[in-house]
Image (cartoon, each protein chain N blue to C red):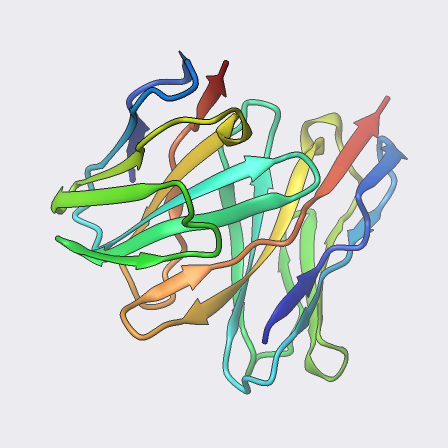
Length: 112
Length: 116
């Protein structure tokens, strides 16, 4: 089975802190994604990566950056966390083409 | 520009009722794929189905069926004889090809509540 894991289920940080959200997949997938989910807005794509060291902006990249140094790991970075970044963050991976992404359990981030 | 609409924010039904979740996808592309995902209360999204724009045959999997009509840009999902375990948020997600890879965009989701 495809396994996508995220480093934390719940995270509480303070405004201005640098925050790292980690995602690891074990199926050698080329594509990895970061979404955030907010009530009434569904899932919105922040960034995605289709290869090591490659990244592409999604629909809402402002305030975020990403890193993909190894194929299995995709990190989302909040350089200076703000309260409007309080959200559920979902990581996903896929093998490319039109294969469906598989999702991790999510990280609920609260920024105080 | 593409646009996906799930007009139903929340639906409540009584167990054993049939329920249809609507999805409308507007695009100028002639070739595309559409996905449905389920998000139960536990939070993890579960892939349900993928259909392409060439295939307008209905698809049935157990109590689930999908009706894709290209002429109306609709890709609706029907649950027959609903059960409490079907309570979840359901997302319709069109697949978009980009220069470097592929990505899914998601509708806003429909919250389905199935009550006894």
